[in-house]
Length: 237
Image (cartoon, rainbow, N blue to C red; front, top):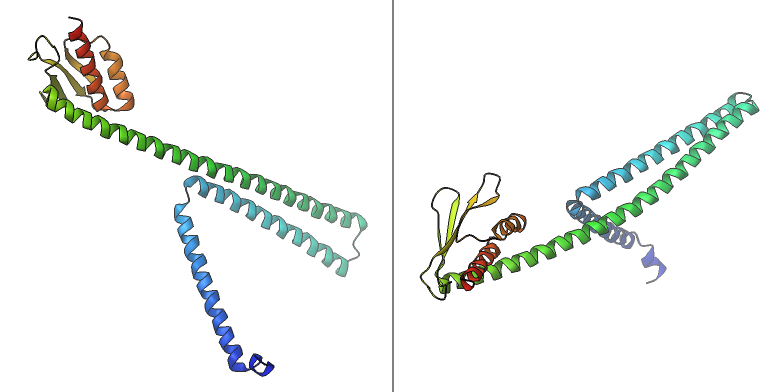
């Protein structure tokens, strides 16, 4: 391309249009990224941004005060015979504001480090919770599968004798009397806690098992543990 092409008005205009289009697309991508990033921010991140913004506002305020003092100094120099004491006072003020600005910048850096650490902790905690939830879901699926098998091969039945009560009955537990029925009844209280209101025959560990049920909310696991206790009772007869 020769110099005539480079400085040709049409060529220059086309280059300007191309650059303008690229800048506009870049702005669109930046705006889209900022909107998408803003949606993903947690409350903790928003709080950190507010702190950071407050520090920026404080910094701007300090700069404005510094500029105001400098303007006063320049004005006094031009219009009035400024005394050395007044000049030293204003100079001290400027220095104080500069020191405060440095302190604010140091605090800002510290808050930025704290915010980064907080974000890492939040991500780690979130990943940990997701992992635990996945393990819990897998455990529940296995328990439900075992429960279905248990219902099929142990003649387990579930009934509701009255509101908020559910009764679980088992057979094929006592090897000497396969028709013998072992049962227990759970009641769900208004505060969503389980209570064992009937157990036949009585299971010594029932209180501890109910306490564990209210803690882990694993009903299927509780049913398996109760049946295991019934089997132990039958073996000891």
